[in-house]
Length: 214
Image (cartoon, rainbow, N blue to C red; front, side, top):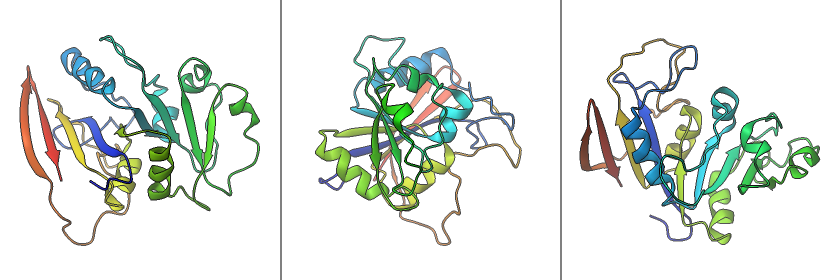
């Protein structure tokens, strides 16, 4: 882990064949017990980070439920600043700290987000500079970030070697589909990258939770 940036955990539930959702976007793969585990994890981090597509498709709240605990800061990556202001994370931003990260060249019309209580961070010229963003977040006192996807967001974190830990729930489904979102999308590596170390395996009813670290 690089001490000048927050500790980054990739968290996801995927099918046996590595899909995060069906081709139609259905992503409710986890059992109730696994959801409780995830929400226990959420309350231990300072922030939850997702990409714009996750918000557009799932419209999640990204809060701590099922267990008692403080809601982490919600961070949304949206280089073009095109997120719907009617999404639930935006509508609840005055109650729960929310940061929208956009590029420097994104349209200047962000007043609609600011009016709803959203903090805006511009980072990177045309696309978001993740390394620079993590430095900014670290200076804000954010020490642990839970990245909950989707596949494209996951890819950029792996590509930039910014992942310290991976926690994956393998659910008992096979989804298939060339258009179904996989755990990691993007261009992919041309060569085999450095491996992660398997630290722990948990069995939760019909699911397996895999814990990997650098």
